[in-house]
Image 1 (tube, helix red, strand yellow):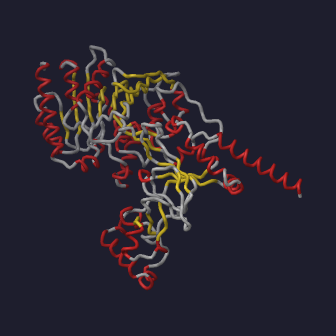
Image 2 (tube, helix red, strand yellow; image 1 turned 45 degrees about the vertical axis):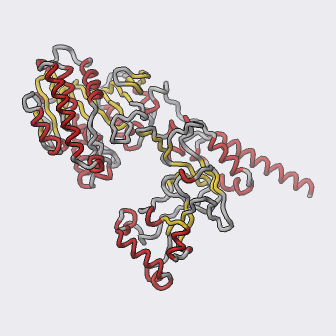
Image 3 (cartoon, rainbow, N blue to C red; image 1 turned 90 degrees about the vertical axis):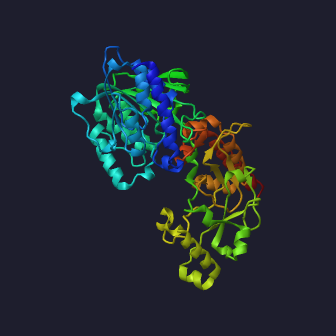
Length: 528
């Protein structure tokens, strides 16, 4: 096909993509994980693929989630017709698939309007030596349990790996395609980079290390999102369907483009087997386990509570007074971090935070009959919640009483769960000294001192402030190494990840405090 005709096809395809996208609500496309591949990125991926094939090799191409055909368009641009012996695409959504069939009907491409995860893999002679895909990014909570069981079974049958139930749909796509590939075939996947850091990604990483030969992972700078309508940090993963050689190493690259990265490094797979966080590479040279104390040695770390409906359960003091609701049914709760200008919270005589935005959480232990008899205005408010459907929410309907919250007492230290770079000090996360009786919602991580730490804190009133100062002076890079990053430079820490942050200095502070206490006791005994 002439280059001019191929370019014309791509112009038509982009116009079609824009038209079809405009006809669907962005929230629906987001839920279905439909994020179109940019032309430049599709071209880069096929340009990379071309370097992996010899000139005489015939291409059998498959895209399990083809959409309007961005990768096929790039295939035509980079490979001549005589090099392409077959081209198949699967698309579950007729809204995109049917117009794409019309667009490409005079080319070699065959688009099948069926669910790829339901399709049967071909016989050996019809398998594919080039898989290129941007699979649907459907999060696990949008996949019902019956469907998860089916996907798990089929994926394990295809590649021998049991995918974690918290994994997104893209993980199943990648594993299912294993049985469609010819031996030695090449695969390039455009996927969220989060699998490299999270627990559900362990099985997928094991597949890449043990079942195939992992060639190259390029991670894009999270501040430069690849999809304008999705806040996701992306990576391109390349591998061949072949057992990895002994002492195999993997090329990791970062930022810039796939074929012209700003940083790259060769990493042995024996290093990758040890390191639970692959996004360290290529910035890091090797993996070194933390040998000293970590935060979890001093604190039990929990996510703040999930209310089930913040708009309903969290009220201001003025709203509680206006509705004449009993304050005994509420407890103070911290507002969002953006409403905390300082990293220390002081309190009034009742333990309520002294803030411009004072909020309270509805959390009462009484039965409905007790509320009807004693607190009619509160009962009216509960009736409002029922009319809004609050009790039918997932969290509320699994509680003993839908209006009673999970147990989250106040903690002396809280850490922001999400963060972006602060231009002044580059701190992505804030540690807040909580001198109040306020609990916290799940936008925070709550640090509860363990028994040993609590005992020393009780004996030394000044120690709490010293620990808080130390927490806020932890090197930001140490925090980031344990967490994960999403598109747009959004950083996140889960409780276990925060717990793995090195914290040797806390040992020094605790020992110094205990020594001072011992010396003080000796002095008292000597002067008695």
